[in-house]
Length: 267
Image (cartoon, rainbow, N blue to C red):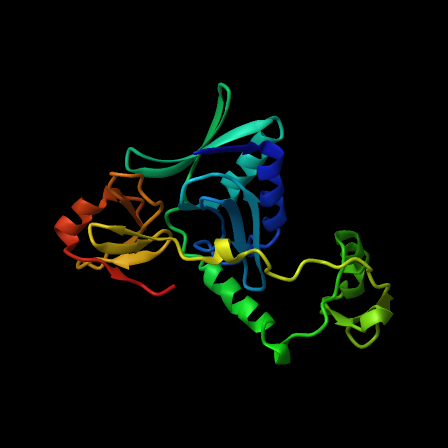
């Protein structure tokens, strides 16, 4: 459980929400926004076939991950408009895996989208940052503000890909198909090194329980072929709960009593 400002939570939701599959795309098990908590940060992650976006804000929280359907994200986002400071709790009750958002007597409870496929955003970002560190694959960064980007949107109004090419101190060359050229004046401030300071967010979140190494957010299969996800790290002296694709929530001891063992599945 942790507390943060409502506008801070709203901001990270807004940063990633546009990066989703088209509404009419047949990708329902991926069309979710993932809230992912670590002891240092709350992350919001979303993806489509063309983009991955992850935003974060500092919190002093627990370790859990919860995919949320976009219709529930929209309801939460509307509720945050009239809120000031919000307490966030990850709860497992009545066989369900939920997030509870509270301010005073007002409360919104959002179910986890148990049907959602795993979004291995940490692995994807590690690959991307590894490519950044390869000098042969990286060039001078192009710096554009949100206002800069909005000015170029109509350059690709007929579906052309808009490309940004750094010209160093001269600025940025903008192209859209064969019949459009533009030049963006360079920005003068030094931006952050891409990915700098993200190492705590990208670490795996593994823990030992009864001699078993488990990872929050990872998938495991038992002897019966049932796939389980570890939604959260247990508290001291507590037993981990597992969540199946059918939204069944069980303590690990009950899963092992039937399934005998757990095999880690690849991302």
